[in-house]
Image (tube, rainbow, N blue to C red; front, side, top):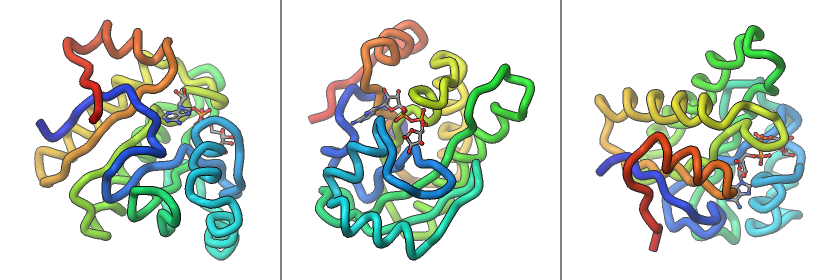
Length: 171
Ligand code: AR6
């Protein structure tokens, strides 16, 4: 199955690239971003991000994975949820799409995404999950890649169980 929804800590995924729910300044933040910086090595990753500078919402940049099992980290700032009428959906879709295109450019065969924007940025989880699944699925119609969508917290896990029949434990 080219798209799998799994419950796991993304920093432990043994894939070619993991995706970071970043901010536009590419600074270490909280949530999954903080966990990725800590696991990759704060100093190394900070330096690599500072060299890139910044990244607009919905775009993506790539760094080494440093101490992670993953070879690369793809950083994409998702939209901050306001009320749904500020292009949030298209920007979130762009984040998934541009991350996938960058993974393809770097010949990644496997990629793991967190549920971008659904934590500190406040995007409603059910809508965000639907955008993630539809964007990844349409990309996979034309591309060979194994994509994991990693749900982490209890609420995201509940939403994905409601919307999709099977959640797999990643081993
Ligand atoms: N593995 C997988 N998913 C995780 C992990 C983990 N280790 N930790 C948290 N999540 P968030 P955002 C889930 O807040 O909403 C940062 O400060 C979490 O449960 O990490 O895009 C950045 O620097 C949630 O479902 O990202 C930005 O400033 C999802 O990851 C800002 O927060 C995304 O939550 C980005 O906010």
